[in-house]
Amino acid sequence: MRDKTQTNSAAVGDGLIRAGAIVFFVGALATLVTVAPLLLGTTPFPTYMFGLSMLMGVGFLIAGAGVFQSIASGRRQAREGS
Image (cartoon, rainbow, N blue to C red; front, side):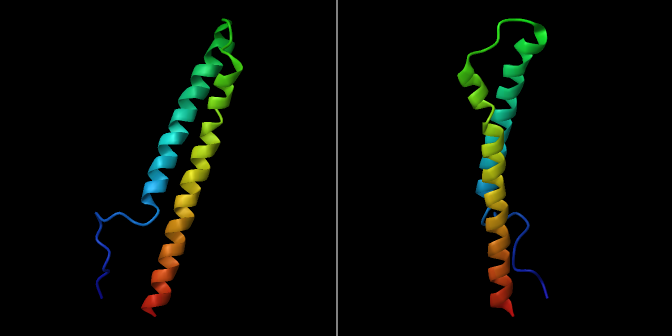
């Protein structure tokens, strides 16, 4: 029996996973920018820049929520199918 899901269709949690990845990479970039002056011996950035580094964790949590949403959707479909 063929699967009814097409390969190019978006799953339930895909939007959250993509948004989480974007937020994570923005946080990673902020971390690199914040740490660079410390390694180069120049004047460090203000404290709020270190707060932007926390976006890595926020992005990870958003993407994790998308993964759990996809898992829940798959389990619901499996229950309905049997």
